[in-house]
Image (cartoon, rainbow, N blue to C red):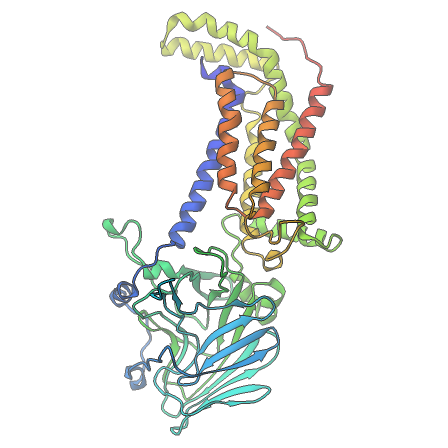
Length: 523
């Protein structure tokens, strides 16, 4: 049967094919940025050494060897409101921060498998001196933690409240102050996100794995990524989701705002050097727009909404407005789905009417096609048949591709909601009801993906049947099964949105079919 005979099914196939391609691309990009398999860091250090360090001229203090802190070095811990901070006493590095509310750690700890074999090193920490080790224990007060040594070097972490720490570094010899350290042990640190630098209007972000692992096309000469350009504002994604083996979402950030220009070195990271006095601010907190803007307007750029960022931000603005009146984020998503479906009601109505009209036209369409079957694959005759079919459609006010646009229009919304659920701190660990305890995580029992797949089958069964029955039957079950597979690992909030969207679509299809009155066919 010719393609024209399946015009309606072609629209559906086109929609699902494009959706699957985009879903596959989304998974591929995320897996490339966050590959689950660790790579020994000795390979990473070789790659980092090969990269040309983009450092500015530095004085002799920069040539001093980096102080290597032991993994068993003594530490000191202090609670800071919503955070519990841990420093290494030998160099003053901040090696861990814990979100007290739920115990989320900002950085990775060393990890071992069930046999006691090391499988991951601890993150080397942020801050601290690189070449002026401290002596004894720091002085800890209610408002500060101070490290010092006999040479006159002094590093003060001044707690100013909230998620901001003021850092003051005094060094007579211009010793180096680390900002963000590169990993250098024989084991890779698991689940690192991005490292980034910011200016007033733009952010340059590089995934850690892009620097620590060889790219897919390395056999064609592709090279590992380098540290982002040096800037006075540098930071990294934070927040280790303990249940995630291959983490893709980071709801916290650690950001430096330094008074002056740091130095970038591919093997060391970002640091200051040659200065006797350095002041900086350090933000360690959630990726929430209000708090990031309070720290500084440029820092709101660390919220990564993905390719459809503008749509995702608009959707979150609407969801936040709904949440003011509906205190549950799940119900806010349900109401948002209803609003969006109502907004698309005229377009979806037109699509359904086109399908119903196509069913009326199908017998006459087959007659035209049968007239040209005797010419086989004669392209000239096929062109004539196509012209005759298009003229027939035009007389009857039918556009075979008219139903494609409403389905494609939903795709930016779909992917924007996906990226928003993976980026917005407010939706992290937000429950809905029953077994759904986290709308930003997958459904633990796969109930919502299965219900969504069932709703897709029901909706297709209600859709006016045209074209090849065998093809339609295959589409009715194959595509929902594939979508259930994809949705099984997506945030449950996304499944909830799509399920409600489908249920309203079923009601709309039933209503249109109930009130539809066939129109005479013009030959």
